[in-house]
Image (tube, rainbow, N blue to C red):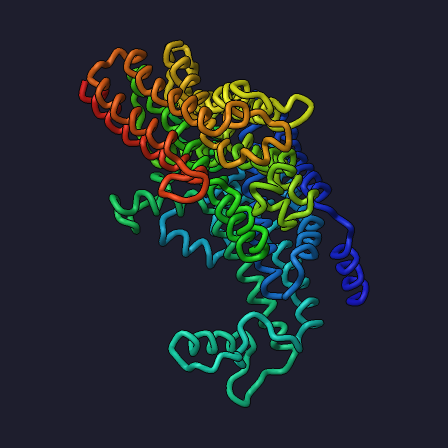
Length: 591
């Protein structure tokens, strides 16, 4: 029997499951789980909005658990990431069972399965009593059975893997190769000794060591289950603990925070369950992002650093500014106000992340179609350096694109539409057959429209009607004009590559000197136009000053040497615009 289990596990571990196949399988399991839950409830009167947030909440919860379990098993059993992922994917079929078990146990009436709300002391009591009492609500009978079976599976899997690897050095080894006896290393040695049950000349036999390690892994897995099962409690204690006292936050405070109607900027979600779903989806999205960044850094460091080097940080700041400009305009023009509570702050951060993911997805697309240019002027790019295979880079781009849509849709559906439009515009800009970046003025006009989509995403957040109706057409004209004339500053560094690839940017078409004059004049004109559009003539001399300074920067920048070069001009222009915007905001607010 033992050999049969080992062979079955080995077969699952070595199954040829690719990233796309695994992702589709995982999403299918989540979809079935949501389907089963709602089917047993006869779909009640659940709206499409409810089902969307039910899916995102479920997906993010189990995806975070998947990553944590993969890390736990991979690290402590020294098993390859892919093998552990295959095992977990197969084991995740168990998540379909809790609603079925609850349906049977309750005699068809069902239980309400979500989280456990409790105080800090109550959480400790529930931890040592396997989630405590009242299994009819929160952590229900079905969920507890699911957790128990999962822990047994993790224990057995750990035993099998550790038995075959007992002679290897696992995680923390008391016989560290480090020679320095300082307090930190001594602490690590003690942990290693505890983990290996090795104290001086005394070493516990193999079976007991494997049993101890397997129980430790299973206990760590229980901590993960429990932490996620009471996650709203941790958030509420962390947020409200400073004002109420960490020991004074109770289940009522947690319910008030997560089950009360959700107000995400201008959106109102009155339904209690949908409110919980959207709030937890926002938080889980941010947690997931942090976990993925950690995994990429520790497991795929070379690729991660290579892509990080390709972020083009001036553009990251630029896109972040676009979203905040849209939000600021909405607050001013709509005379609206919202409470920047923990949910709005988290929602804003998530939408900001979605914008940056959309930008990075467009970078991947651009890198594919600009390889000829990059070979000559940007040879540090990942595809030129062969840091990624084309298939890996394509998968990365698709993943960034999908998560940008998911994260933005969680915050606001209309914002997700604008980000989808942004992605479509940037595709037409970079990709064949149109490849609109080849044509001077057309390319930057298209880029300005893409930028406008991000501004719109920020604007509708604080708009009571969730529309851009209150955004004057003159402001749109100003933004498009400013972006059209400002964006060409990025083209000067690629003149040689653009010429060879038939991309006719302003500096390619008119030459470097005249190109500088044209772009500098356009930026100067944009500053002056802002005075007329907002009918705020107190800005005139400020616009003259910053516009004139920008004109001087662009017209005097150098290819390589000097303080202002083709590669850092974007930073200079961003800084100048930022200073002008601060003065602009001060004058407008003061008025």
